[in-house]
Image 1 (cartoon, one colour):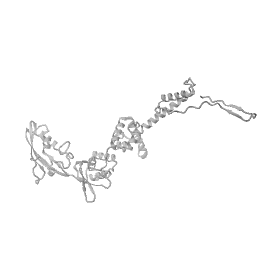
Image 2 (cartoon, rainbow, N blue to C red):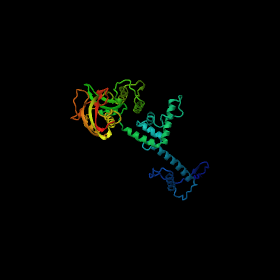
Image 3 (cartoon, rainbow, N blue to C red):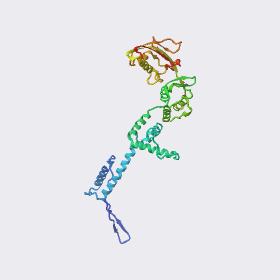
Image 4 (cartoon, rainbow, N blue to C red):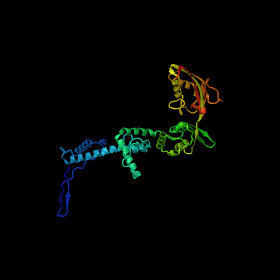
Length: 405
């Protein structure tokens, strides 16, 4: 196969300058068939396929050794094709988020579907951008592009050393595709607004103005502030939560040094996700103060002071208290049975009798017999039990039995 045929010079007639060079060429090689296995990808399979092809094409040759030039070329080609096949497999794998293994590929694929893992890690001060970790090589003279490249390098190295974190980001990123943050239906307006850190509870409804509908949203803000209260003292925790939330939704982050009102903070978020041309108005909830008079029978083995403290905690506005802001919904009727269940679950309470159960104010009638205070629309029951502000609800406690002290 490797030997070239020897030409033969033939002269015809009596003219020595009119010779012909004749070459006895071997039979033409057979055409390549269509039975090639395209799943042949590794070195051994490729080498075996090529050797089988050589043997089939040159059946007259009965001996092939590793020292033969044809075998050496076959093995060299098999090695190169094996490397190219591996490179093709790796390239194909990195094109799909589910099976990608390189941190840079996963990060880019997640960003294509709208999940910027690097930006979220920076916004939430998560690893590798925790507040106590500094990017090496950064300084005041470092360009923004250089800083960006260094952040990418640090982030990709963190994922490379912590593949479990990268796999978790894959799952979260894929789920984020199905998270619909736009405000289209009334439920969307209510649910999206309730997701904001400054909102404890929201309620939405639509009203027709005669020309177009208006979406109205009533909210119970953080610490039950009013929407237009000025000089609100935001603590570091709520500021961090708001900044993280706005950055994750790519919304303008307000300047908290001026103590903006809650309406000012919510407006950019609502404008970014509401329907174009849809007018949205925010309203404060209508708080309805509740007055109650309760008679508590204490177990003989408990002190009245201990039970009194527990009752105040159970009916309080902090932790898991019954009147904790945001626990009750808009227009949710208040039932005496719920108060009875809450107090009776306290250790040391043998019995409870509700003497008075009504809205705060002399114009409202007692509802202890019906056991229900009806609320409508934007009304929500409150009971701060603050003697300085009885309009926001209060209650009296009378104790029987138990131990004094």
